[in-house]
Length: 296
Image (tube, rainbow, N blue to C red; front, side, top):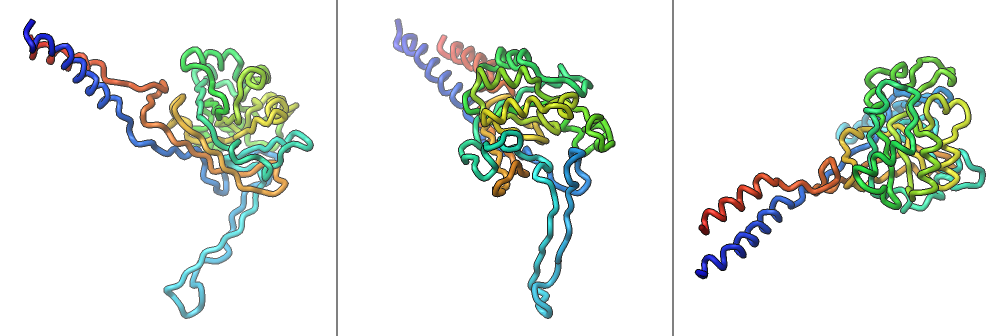
């Protein structure tokens, strides 16, 4: 066997490895904002105070000094306004209030379960244990200490079509409010079988509209187990199923039962929408073929 013949397989393997390595190089991590901008007129749960923004002053810091400038505003709102976090004390006497939540409990691996194809236009759909297990069959077990985000598609209507689309009514009667959520069975399965820090959803809350005005069962299952709740999460269409780290940072209100939060994710550039690296197999095979021709 000639030296070149003996060497050629090694060369092919080395170059293929280099090629795979180049193709597998990660892109720069990217930031995704999962928070709705707080503005007057945004959708609110009927029992909560409307958000009010009042300009106190915009102008010269001191008369006669036009180069100086000052802005100051007043806010009036419910704790549970916009994209916000529910502390366990929201439903559980003696549980963590907002300022008592450990900082480490506000961040974790992001998991996005997309159930839009199952929900359709059903405003009372409740995400089941089976839906969560179907996701796991495709993407793997929900990691410990993760932040589970449920994508129903309702977030697309948060601003665009008003309360009639987002809440199914413009009435202040909570019995007429409807939106998709998490089934109590699914919530109990998460508590009993998985270890998540937080459950978020792109609707007004995890209790489906049909249940929300009654007993709030999902809140009553998750919060006693220190599983925090994120409501009105934005832009889940920009998130991959796995491969992100989510941060949900609420205003630290003393004795608060909840607060608006700046929620964002850092997405690992190495992951695809399936949460796995995606080498260009066609390009790699072409490289192998050309290398084999070169050494024939």
